[in-house]
Length: 240
Ligand code: ADP
Image 1 (tube, helix red, strand yellow):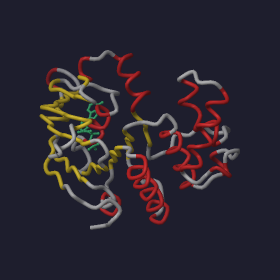
Image 2 (tube, rainbow, N blue to C red):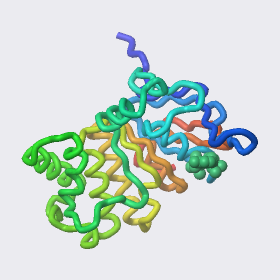
Image 3 (cartoon, helix red, strand yellow):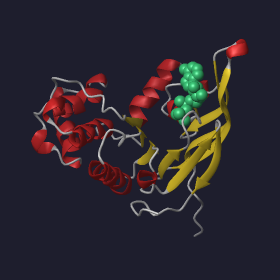
Image 4 (cartoon, rainbow, N blue to C red):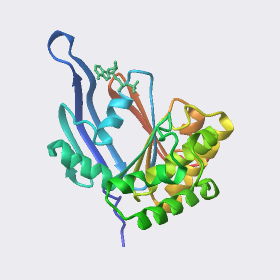
C-alpha cells in the first residue's frame, strides 16, 4: 500500500505580520509559507530581527497573522478568538523558554503541576502526572527542591517537565539552551531528541547555535521576514 506523506500538523500560507500603523508600521513577516509534519524536530534559525520570535508567537497561538492563514491540525487559528486560542494552547502546546520561567520558592513538583492546576485536575492526578514528568527528565529525586537549589541545567529540565506534563502534541522552545554551558546544552538537546523520538512530540526550537540546530531533522532559515531556505533530512542527534 502506498503511503502518503502525513498531513502537516502546522501549515502557514502567506502569513504577514505588521506591527504598528501608518508611517511607523513595520512588516515583520512578509508572506511566510511553512509546513511542519507531525513528529518532526525543527530548528528555526536566522539573524536577529528576521522574524523568528514573531513566527513562534504565532505558532504558539499567542498572536495571529495580519493576513494569511495558519492551520493547526486543520483548524484555522486566525479565525479563533483569544479564548479559543488559549484552549488550543492548553490542550496541544507546551512551552520552554530561555530563562526557564519557574516560580521561585516553589518546589520542582509544584512548578511542573502548574499547567494541570489551570486545567482543574485533582491534587492526586496532578501529583501523579507531575512525578511522571519529572521522572521523564531524570529529576524525580529532586521533586522537593526549589529552583534556587537546582543547577541551570536542572531548572531547564523542570521547565521541560512542566511543558510535557499535559501531553502536548507540540513543544515550542525559544533558545532553550541560551543560558547554559555547552555540556548542559547538549544534555537538554538529547532530552528534547528523546521526547521527540520516544513520545512523538513535534519539537519547534529557535536557536542561534548551529551545534544545537544539528540535533533537529529540519532546519528552517529565516531572513528579512521570510523563510529563506529549509534544510530537511538531518538525522536528529547527529551533528552535521
Ligand atoms: P527575531 O526573533 O528573528 O529576532 P522578531 O520576530 O523578534 O525577530 O522581530 C522581527 C522584527 O519585528 C524586528 O525588526 C523587530 O524589531 C520587529 N518587532 C518585533 N516585535 C515588535 C513589536 N511588538 N512592535 C514593533 N516591532 C516589533
